[in-house]
Each structure stands twice: as C-alpha cells, then as structure tokens.
Image (cartoon, rainbow, N blue to C red; front, side, top):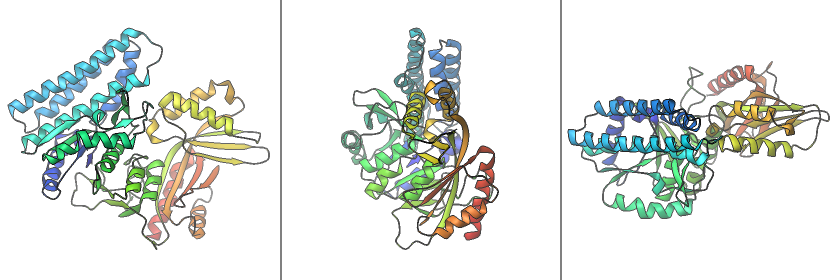
Length: 460
C-alpha cells in the first residue's frame, strides 16, 4: 500500500493511514507500506540543492530549518509516547544535519552546474523523514513498524533524476532485506521515489516515483495486490480540479491506465503500470479519507468489453513548426538530448504532421520531467543553433482514453464532431488502440477537454 504526501503530511491523514493499516493488518498475512515525502517537501529540497550550488547559505539553511519545524510540529500532534517522540526527533535531526552537510559541501565546490547525482542525494531526505514518522506511529499502536530505505532494495541505472529499476537485482535485494522482515511479522515502511545505483549512489525515479516504488516492490515480493491511497476516490473521467462533474472510473485495463497516467492523470506514475501488467497484479486506487469507497480497479483486459470513451486528459507539449518538409530525425534527437540534459527525462512520445511545404511536430513533456521542464526546454532550444528555422511554442495534448477506440470509428467521429470550431494541429491514434491524442493551441485546451468530457457523460 502506497500513501502519498497528502496522507502523511497532516495529523488527519496520518490518523486515516493508521486506521487503514490496523484494519488491513487483520485481513492480510503481510503488508508492505510505501510512503512519499510530506506534500511540498521534495520541491523544497530541490530548491535547497540549487541554492547550495549558488552558494546561498542563508537560503538552503532556511529551507532546512523550515522542514525541521514542520516535521517536529507534526510529531508534536501525534499520539506518541515521550520515549518514542524523543527518539524520533533525534533521528529526524540526524537526517537533516546530514543533508545540511551535503548542501555545505556543494556550496564549497563553487561549480557552475548542480550534478544530478548530488541533487538526488539531497532530495532523498524527504521520504526518509516521512517513513520514520509513519513507522513510529505504527509502533506506538502495537504494530511492528520499521522504516526501511529503498536504497537497500531498489537498484537502478545511473539516470539520475529519472532512474529505471533493475528488476532482477531488485528482486534479490527484496529477498535478502525485506521478505525476512515479513516472516517475523514486521510491517516495513519503505521510502518511495528513491533507490540507488549498482555502485550505491542515490538515485530517484522521477516525479511521483513513489507509485513506481510500490509497483516494483509488489512485483519483487509477489504481492497479491498493489494499492495506491490518494486524496480522490479513484481515477477520474478527467481532472476534478479543472472539471467539477468528473466521475470515478470503476475499472480500467492496464493499457488504459498506462495511457491515462502518461497523458496527464497526476495520480499515477506513468511507468508503474507495466511491471504490474507483466505479472498480472491488480492495482487499486482508493481515497485515504473515504476508505469505504471501492475506488478504481486496474486489471487485465476483459474480453467483450463494450466500446466506450472512458476519460480525457490534457498535458503540456512543445510544438515546433517550420516552412519546409523533410526528415525529423535530427530534430527529435536534439530535443531528446536537451530535455535529458535539463531534467534527466526523455521525449517518449512525438506527434507529427507534415505536408509538402510545412512540418509540425509536438513533443509530449512527461509529468515526471517536473513543472518547469517545458519552459526550460523552450529556452534551451531557442539558444541552440541546430533549431534555427523552427518556431517553438507551448501546446496542449488532449488525449481521449477509451475501450476499442481503434475498432469503433464512430467513437472517433463523435469526438471530432464535438470539437467543431477548435483548430487541431495534429492527431494521432495510439498503437494500443485505447487512446486518441489531439494537439491544440493552449487557449483551446480547456474547451476541448470540457466538450469531450460532456460526450463521456452523455454516453454513460
């Protein structure tokens, strides 16, 4: 079970977490918990890392002091005994002081750029703090909770900032370091988001990577199910923060959930679905504040499912156009290199449209690249001589997720008819046959999502 930053960041959320674990502990032989850093902590740590690189001692020290105050205030409001509380405060102070030493060493180097591996080492502390708080809370309530750093479990490649786990090596670590705890009746509270390279250097799994951690641990431990506890009732027909009448989707196939996650559903990490799909492990997304609700179940595709439009998402993209036609290989390589340099992420999806005299290409910016990736990429490309002649601008990629979209073309016709008056820059059918992506100017993104969502509501 994975609990996000909104669950562990407030006493109400931690109370819900505790009641859920107490209840499920009676129903399951073994539980593994994965926790994220408190909401907003990872962003603060990233800022601290950059301030350290700029030798802004006052800035990064202020962030460390704020994080200490926030965590200690959270502990103060938890029903912990005096001994447990004192030991936890000492543990948290040790982690923060170690992180402060890392920032200090970065500041003393006076380097022009911040090395990604150093940034990963600094941001590691967020999840480590949260795991220790949750484990202490479990122990105070007669559960044998132990905080466990994923650096001892999840072995990744060296793609700092957006690393990929080595599932074979990770399974070995899980067998050696995690499964023995389960046999002793202990509930491991594992740090999400973080891992380590083969040589032991800290790595991270990309934005929202705690979901990915839960997926990898589920596969490596042969879990019966993986649950993601969040602050909404499940995967929705669209973003509920932007559309008031969004609804919960009761069931989705692995393919649909993967497309939904990649193209903008913020609840799930895009890469978490594939390991579960390969091992046929069901995934449930549930609301920590309304645990009586069934949420969304993600599982293998059920034969004979009726064709339907299930959801619509919107995600940032970088649109590039020029007044000539030809190969896009060099441009794709350039954008991929620049995005990798900036964020450690790659441009997985490219949508293009060409005529005899013009070319338009859209690079989808994955959510794991972070909120500033689009702007940073646009600036980097404008300064590159290799992109001369290309006009760059932000666009929106509106993606429709559905069942059998590639077979029932009347569904595609209904979608396009609903967008009358909205200029479409490019259109692409996903090879999984469960997604249709449309590229539009940013000012039309909200309109397109609203109209397609109305279509979903009418069809249901």
